[in-house]
Amino acid sequence: MQTRPTPTRAPATPNLAGFGTTTTYPRPRRRRLSLAFAVAVVIALATAAGVVAVSLSRSDTRRTYIAATGWPAHGQAAVQVGGGQLDLSPGQAPVPIASLAKVMTAYLVLREAPLQGDEAGPELRVTAADVADTQRRQINDESVVAVADGEMLSERQALLAVLLPSANNVAVMLARQTAGSVATFVGWMNTTARHLGMTDTVYTDPSGLDEGTRSTARDQVLLAGAAMHDDVFAALVAQQEAELPVVGTVHNTDTLLGTAGFVGIKTGSDDAAGGCYMFRTWRVIDGEVRAVTGVVLGQPGDNLIDAGLAAGRQLADKIALKVPQG
Image (cartoon, rainbow, N blue to C red; front, side, top):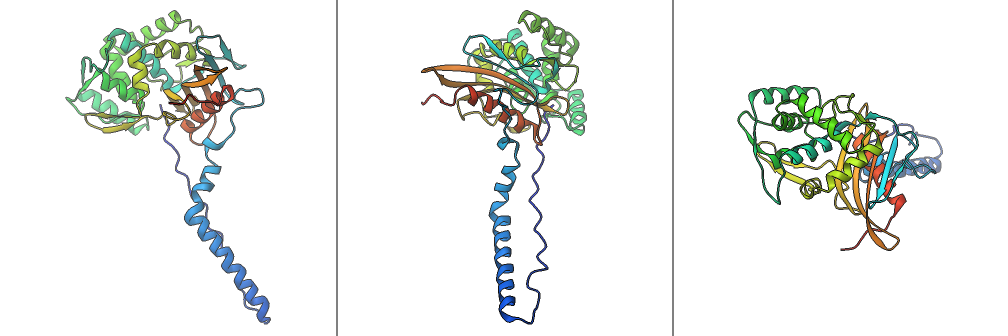
């Protein structure tokens, strides 16, 4: 489940009623009136043009997440440069991972029904039960995309719905179509995790909404490497937006795409998991362009998506600031 960003409130304007009080001394009175006018002007300017700056100073994107150790001060993280060894933060332990679970869902769907190039793939028919399930999830404030009874979604479109706006409802529909039932699909998720060496991972649902779906940063980096070997998966997570039949344009929650070498992969956030981010970025290290794959879990913040993104970027920057040109 992806939490919705919390609106930022503009700071209240202070009460200036005490300024400009009448006195028997003309010159001090004029000074006080001038001071009142100056303060009022400053506050008006701040309200009109500076609220954004005030909001940004409190924004999760401006917080420092990386401690002196080089790792996030909270939660856990793991990084791999190229095909080298995994570097792990202390305290690796299975924790909720929210929508990072959808990476395994998409990986399995593409393994069972591979796509070539821009191929759309087999179609998924939305049922009345799917619409009712979507409405229930929406009431519960889950991440969903609107669907209609009888709507046809291609495999590619369904995967985009799962990977970009992080639609829980479509993740469940894909799981059921791919394996025949959600329970069977979840069994495949766990079997695949064991085959990938994800020794501290348990999946209990295809969306990550269930807190029982748990993993470590180390295990999720292993999954990231496997998933990004699929060219179609890599192309999907690199898309900033997509068009879907009913809902129209959907946007990727990974707002780092196209900046600082970032090419994906997936955000995740809810109260149990905190801010999570699985990422791939390209950096110049020792004179060579290298892929940096990493995961941060359990990042705190007011906007948990931003918190995960900020921690991930800061971790990547700690490894190498230089980004390939062109």
